[in-house]
Image (cartoon, rainbow, N blue to C red; front, side, top):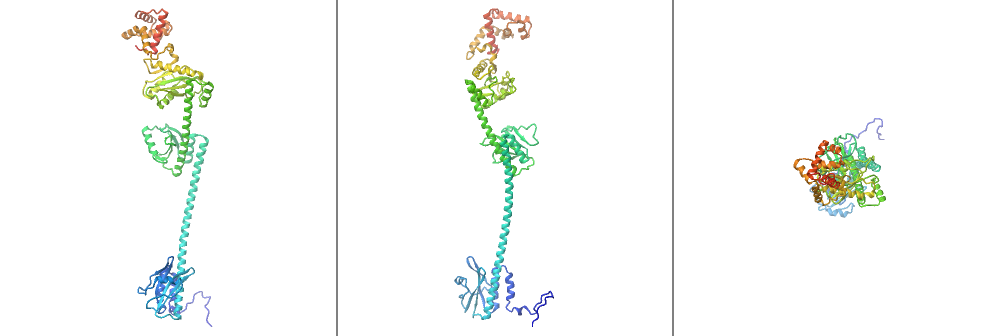
Length: 577
């Protein structure tokens, strides 16, 4: 009976015999090396090297199966007989004999695993191996096949692990990208919804700048193309708002226009509202700390698009309103139905039921310039004397040839409009005619003719620039100056020539004295007060007038002609000597 190993010792009992006795052919030691080797070509070389240890056989060649067929593994013996690689394909993955010179026995042992052929080892001998030798070779080939299968499995597992790691990395990256995209989409949705609500409320530029401030936390503002502030939302609004030079503004607009999106200019992020190429406005964010990120840029760009649509809509409405207002005043000047006129005026926001004045302005060199029309409207609005109504609407304005015509409920204040236009246009050479008050649409054509008459009187007088009011023309309302200025001058010379010459030669004021005397109805006290002279001085001057002119001031016809002459001299000829 043999003794069984003890279970209680807790230690492994070892066979005292040496390994060479237990494994005389070294197959156990070789198997340990084969199974720890990771390279398949190295496994085949180890097996080929061990063939000669098992007996009188030699390894002639080794092969590994690949996707393209069999691949030769370089053997340990450089002087081995040559094996025909092409002949190996004829085996059809089976074991079999191969042809080698000077060898009586040659055999290709197939190396196989669960997936099929893994390779070959070709063995030769001068005489065939005996039964033990064949067994040892078969055992070696089995160990080699198992080692190759294990190496292939390890490689596959490694590849799978690498692929799994790659897939996990890609998954994690995709999840992070998805989270980023989800966050960006949420922010973009917030921008769209916030600005859409601002547009739906109809708040215009103020609503857009307020929404942009709420989205970004940065003060938002809009300017016109000239740099004038239109809207501000957020803290730190400068007071007063800085005025930039036109050269700086133009250069800044050119710089921003070269880029497709918002551009940083010093402490500001600036985007241009230019829906059709024309700059309608500027949208900006105050960002002195440069904290703006891509979400801020997205909000600014989207707000700029909304502002561009808003400004374009406003421009189109303004152009339509301006066209309708011009058509209305053109029809009123020519004469139109009263009921229709009231309805059309109400449609453009103008109250035609109030009293109005017609004003005609002519300024040489500004016949077809739109800026001149705007300057006239602005000067009239800022300098006119307002009526008693609590509010006054802006005037209707149009162009007639080289003249600008206004229908305004505000009467111009003496020469205030003329002075304002002279400052704006840089020349005082223009003339203005103002009609009497018109209380209904059917009276507008008459008032238009009055304003033209007043303008004509002014332009045909010696003082051609200035403002003339029709209700102050007096007799000149019925005098037709036209191109008859020389006839009027002749009439004045006929009746006042001697007095004019005397005043010029003696530095006196006899013509002015006579004019004030007639203006005061022949009242000595009033005329003396108007001339700021003593009553006796006035009597002396009137006596000198009788003597020099040889006119009888008591004669009715003489008095009429002299009074007309003094009025023409003062109004049309400008009181010049």
